[in-house]
Image (cartoon, rainbow, N blue to C red; front, top):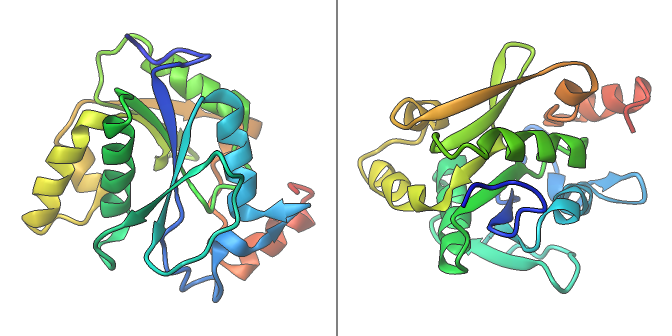
Length: 203
């Protein structure tokens, strides 16, 4: 059944296992409005989906609502592709054929953009549906078949770490976002990114 809202067959996956080197502190715990960056992303995803898995690194403590499932990335240092594989595997094990994926450094994500990507996945003829903003793929804002986890694991075992390389191997539908929708998938990677977002009234 295609992932169309209210999307009973789609879970949420939020990746929060990165080392945040460019930010200089844990991005997931960064204050963002009245919450943290991670809590802000999770809240947007939870509005549209019945269950959310947060993928985090071993030993990291994250503050989240009680009904959010925390999944530990079992192999540190293998990048976002391993984090995505971990989240998709958890979603598949829980019975979801699809997962909406967001990165913790996308605190501007909106339920509207979640819905746009879910609707684009509804025909079911792609393995992944990803956002494109300002001419750039945003693979960590998209909808993925959870069954891709096995293929990702095999690729990682063969030395693949690049999201771009993995996406070249599967059927991908791209959704070009503009205006406020493009801004919703903006990555806040550095202190300068956070300052710019606040200076321009984004948050």
